[in-house]
Image (cartoon, rainbow, N blue to C red; front, side, top):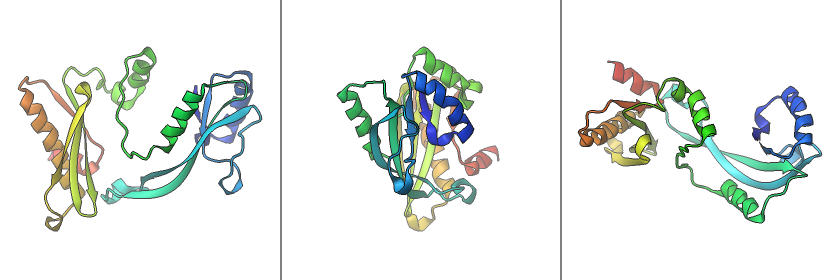
Amino acid sequence: MVIDWSGIDDKEKLDLIPNLCATDNWILLTQPLGASNKTQAPFREAQLVARADRKSSRHKGWWQKGKDEIATHSMTTEVWISTRGKIPETTRTAIQEALEADNPKDTPSFGTEDLEDIHRAGTEAGLLGICNFPGEVYAIDGSNDKGVMGAGFYRIDENRGGCCQLGRGEEGNPSNRVELGAACLALEDAKRKQDRKPVILLSDPACFLFSSQK
């Protein structure tokens, strides 16, 4: 069981602590609880196994302003397990390396174990029937970094993707342009198959959804 300790309120923590103290099959992820970013155990039966600084994320409300900008925030993450638990040194090292990884993009993972299927079925995409969709499913997105526009797609059922650079900065770089470019890139890829399967495009910006409805 993995718990985001910083994401639950004080009452939930108090309710969980007795069960956590009596078991050893859990992992806690949390920001430092001590003053001045210092390490402090969430409760006595917890031991620290890894800690690293990380950076995130997008500006708050970026989608409302139509500006796809990245804000840099320092965020230290700690990993705790039960004092009765033991993990191999190789596992501890792997956890530390994962915390320190500076790759801003994670490769999507779609496993086939029972719990993974159950989890996906309960997500928004799962409830909409997208996970078992008989056609082609693309996730698309655009980027705009200092006037350099890019568009990309990821085809979920084939575990592959593609990307390209769009236009020139002096031509203007609205968010809608990169999102429409990503959609075009995905549709061009789907057209090459010539199997006439239905296609779903997964996209988050409101500007693209409004343009698609016109």
